[in-house]
Image 1 (cartoon, rainbow, N blue to C red):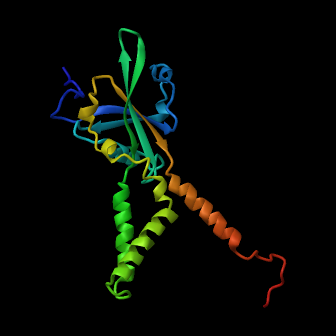
Image 2 (cartoon, helix red, strand yellow; image 1 turned 135 degrees about the horizontal axis):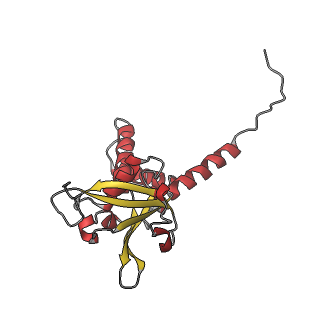
Image 3 (cartoon, helix red, strand yellow; image 1 turned 45 degrees about the horizontal axis):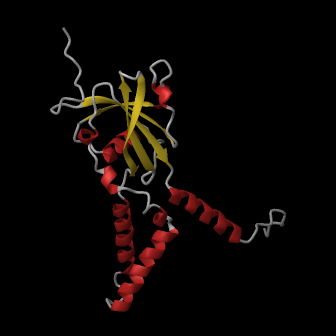
Length: 206
């Protein structure tokens, strides 16, 4: 007789978790019935109970890199069949989860800025103030200030054990695009408009 597959109740081994992913907003709960379940959006992940929601987001990206960008915002909910009422219940378990912590990206930018400043500025209070101002301005320019109110690092650290998964439970995930990308696109278009128009009908100088 074949061995039973590991379940979500077993702490010692990884288990299979079905995760459904789509762009926000969440899908209707009726879509989780087996006969209409969105197979194209299904990911079968082998996970540990100690895995965090951020790690799940990374696993989804590893399975399909088109799912998210580093600072895209993930929201998760647990889907469970209610045997008594004969319908699916949804419980939100984490909102504002990014694959990469914003602090680590900001620190990288700060390190690059510091490297550019090495040997150029004197270590004076004025130069430190200028560096801090430059870092804040760059962060705003990149649109990262838009993310500060939406990212939830405590949600990213929630483990699957804390979600209380039972056998048969599903994890539903929606992804909201990184708002800073939209700002970068607008800035690029603005920069393009500032350029002098190209005269496509001018004669060559050759």
